[in-house]
Length: 162
Image (tube, rainbow, N blue to C red; front, side, top):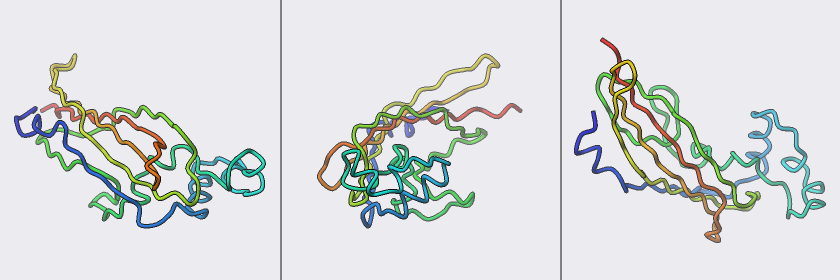
């Protein structure tokens, strides 16, 4: 499962920069989609009263790279970032995310995301099936190169029982 070609991907990176600033509509739609009615995300005056220049984005907005990476949809309708690693006779699941937020995203921010593959390991699970786990970390910055957030993600390829 863990081939030399896959092992060689450790350290590989990919970067995206949004084609335009974040924008109020994007912030509002995301807040609506996640069901968060915090007025920091929709009311400029309220946000200013709380020390911001205007509305801010919900923290996880920045981690939805598909909003600004300009990637085409795949056959499943997913328009986000994938590493395009094909492992025969496996199913791919997302293992989890570890988010760290450093400062608010404001409507004038132009976001850049840089993903790096940190590690890839293989093991056998309790059922005797092989599993390969990849950890990658994204660093999100704005046009001033200020750190906005980081996101370490795990992807797991699990052998399909025969």
